[in-house]
Image (tube, rainbow, N blue to C red):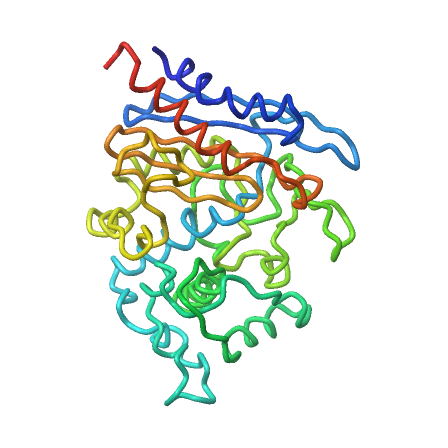
Length: 342
């Protein structure tokens, strides 16, 4: 069974979702440890204001895949180089975090690892974009705000803080970091897949970051803003399988789960997760709000990315993306395990 055949089997659920109108378009990319790749795509890159067919060259808004492809990778690379300590407070890089309460502010005790593993007390999200339109002022707002406390949840605020830390340590925006071919913070240099008609910006987002906070913060914060083609995401996944991006010590950080199945930046496989139940326990993955996802099964030496524009033209519609992701992973791995060239 070839990579093309495996990819076709895995793409069947997404193709059905496109043909039934639940999502406008989808692309699936598969790569193994030997570098064999396959890509399938179908549907539309945009429905409104004009229809546009999806191609292999279209750039997707990767949404929260930015957290793992960009921010987590940069943080762990800086840690390996000795430029930060994962178990030290963020204030090592951001000394002015809650600077008006240096003795009592809980934010000043948060570590890099706390944020990477989403084990802080910070809220899942905050409409930061409603507080102003100056990226520098909004960053100051994030740093000086007394955040409401709650139980640990998956939080964009964690990664916005990590993005600011990277900027402080490197002296450059995240967009200056080399991420690989066909991966870039927006606007993308090629044809873009449309996301939502934004009621705030009063237009369909196409080549502009969908996430309102990422847009207001300048387009390249730590939690969103990255764009990529299916081949760009696949190239990152292949390099991860080959161990070319992070050192063995840092690879252990992203493969070792702590609370709630979370590793440093990623999520590790568990029963009922978004990657499907067929993947091995040595699988990590992450999803993005716009309808994107990436999974890497180290035991099998297999990785796949499913990219959709499920929020186009609105997020207020049940696209079935949760079930689609799991069905894709299950179908793909079933075909992989049945291959004849093992």
